[in-house]
Image (cartoon, rainbow, N blue to C red; front, side, top):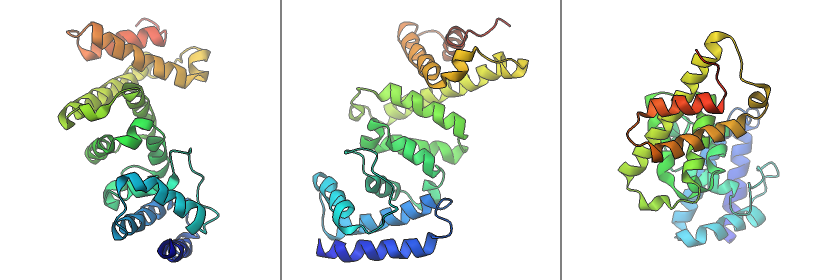
Length: 236
């Protein structure tokens, strides 16, 4: 604690001076540098995995002097844990995902326990930057897939194959929206516009269920059938 009471305020002062004029734009830079220091401190003090929660609580409640430090997302999801996890990756990789997207990621319980999902997202982002709206859709699919599942039973190959499938389902939804609505200069019903998340979830859930029942049917065909039904898409 004596070490933390000295190291943390000093770190926060340095970061505050460095980013005081551009913190909104440099939130990810701030988080990565803060997280890098946390990793150094955990290693220095030989903090075990089961001790991390207490370690971050001690920093938050006793060592931190930063009154602008974002609030913890919940009692189990500490902002300092987010910083710590982001710093696992070199900054060039971490910045492939912007700060608001990192926050959305860590708000999904399964992702807070399974770093391989983030490994996959960074790998995918290296191929092509994932547009913001597509990223939001993708996280919905990942959240619904991972709900109430123990992802540790999946090998990396199995997990990545499933995530690749969710990515294809997400891309198909975007292409189908363009095919049935945008390209025809029309919109879905008012309810589907006003309740985007509800119908976004409904699309993924029905695709997942249909995949289990119709294993031999092409994924693209399943996506289209579900999309037409969920979004009440007008016949071409």
